[in-house]
Image (cartoon, rainbow, N blue to C red):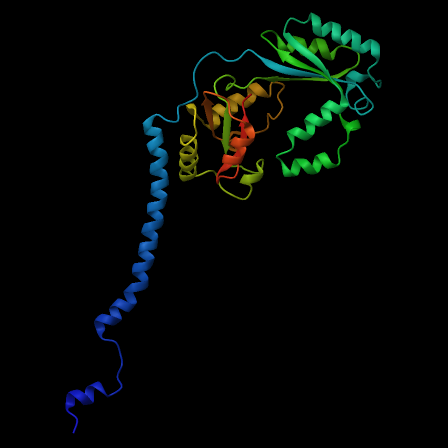
Length: 297
């Protein structure tokens, strides 16, 4: 005859004991709590990494000093594409006599350091090179031909009254319009710039559909910079400095509608020997949070 204890064991009541039931209920909560703690730790680690760099003095703020008194210009000639667009053309294309007069004026203007003539073919090649890393730009290039490009005189500027120069050139017969660009405030201070995704990121293909670069992503970019050979200095540019720089570069007021929320923060790096731009693009271009890699030169 079975004992009462044996009857209890064979009764078929397999309900968990209270302690086991409590563990079964708590286990998912414990795991969820660990996941939250882990995620919080990773986020804190990223923020701590960026803050560590800030406290260590690396990266540096943008350097103080004299602003560059240099830039570049392009004086475009009237052709069949511009005669109806630019009032300066007076419904006519630039003639050989016009070009001689333009070249004489360019030689005489003291603000101009040097200049050269750029043909339609050369302009088209430069146009395609400038869009080589932009998938949307390549679509534009595919429907644009050599004949769509304007001829121009292009050169470098030194100190002087650039407004007066622009007015003088645009008054010459055969000149449709003149664009002037100031050299970046980073000219001579850095070799490459690594731009980060801004708050309004639609202007940058890698940043579309995402938020501003996180502090963890900034720290990861800095870690990669730290591993490069020949780094002399690393600077961090905030949106306010980027706005100042863009206003200097876009001297004619181009892009004046772009606000600080659309301007990227950036790291600028100075090397003992300037690296190849393609190498820097390959290293940083696909990193999360990177909008664009540019050569200051």
